[in-house]
Length: 478
Image 1: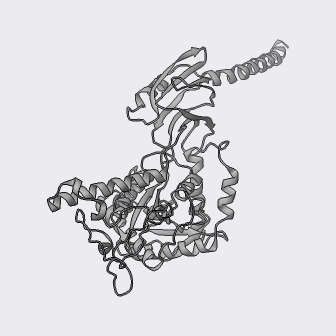
Image 2 (image 1 turned 180 degrees about the vertical axis):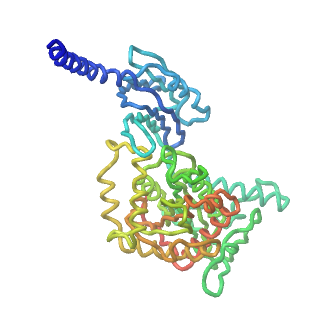
Image 3 (image 1 turned 45 degrees about the vertical axis):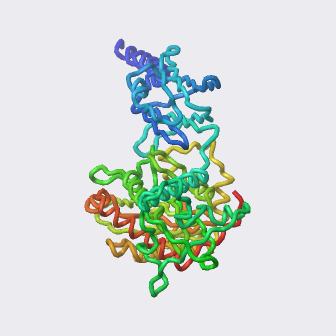
């Protein structure tokens, strides 16, 4: 009898105790959230600070103008060694953050203070667990006066012209101040853009062409340090700066695919893009200088729509997104080139690839509240048949040269609805340089010689495309 009475009583006590555990558990989870990792991604575009934890965190921010600093109260944790490590991650050359301070502001509240080098527009937001990440609290620090990408492009081009003039002066045994930019084929790298402002156009000689009408890479590149001869009056043509936007995929919080030996896609595609950039900057096509613009030149995250907007901002003539493919097994191999399709993918593999690449914003950590849905819809709706046709021509020209240095996964340009290819007015392709999931190709992707060969092949494809499809004169104001 006593045992029968004790049983229900014990159960009631257990239920009450369980309810108390549940009530305390919620607080304990909030109070007991621990730091998994802290990361800082510095860049001129913006600096990102990430605190990854095993539980959700709440944050309140306070911005102080003089001197500029951002204070953030993080609720749900105590000052832990992981947070203190954030101070050690800051580099002196960070373009936006001057210093980091962290301390216990109140029980269960940690205050993080970011001393800033310039006024910024902060975005503080949380990200739910995705892929290999747990909960993330993100601080994006955007400069109040961001750098203008077109001005940067022009500035770098002018520096190159000055350096070329100095080299020409040394070679000719003349003093540098006696050498003008007439030693270079271009007086002004903007060509038709500057002509719109009332300045006279510049002229340049036509490069030699092969019997099939294509300008070779060797012919297209100027000889380093040697002044090119100016053509006789009336024999040249107005110069036009050809701008190629290079888009190294992934970056920052988004590593992209990871090879069997731990190679990150974001790293190798940046290396290849830098090599291709250098080659483009040394190349002339049909007498016109080329200039590469990179959507990212360091290891930081760029949302897909921002990559497209950057290319449009500099009025790029081409957009080339570089990636390193991956699959669930190590067998697939070879390079591929993709163009946009708004009517469905050309294959199941192309659709799978587009879905995977389009998910980069989730992994990289897009602030959904700040994203412009109107812009995203416009980019999708405005994609034109002409852009897709030109993209297919560009992709075909690239495949024709890439196949000479290695295997192709697909012999033709594949199509799918890639978000990063939705620039309505710019021929755009996505190049999967190799399968990083294949051990042999992962090794090649890390080989500087293979990277050089691939950059050469891609450049030859670009030159071949422009030789048959000259860029149109720009008509838009900047």
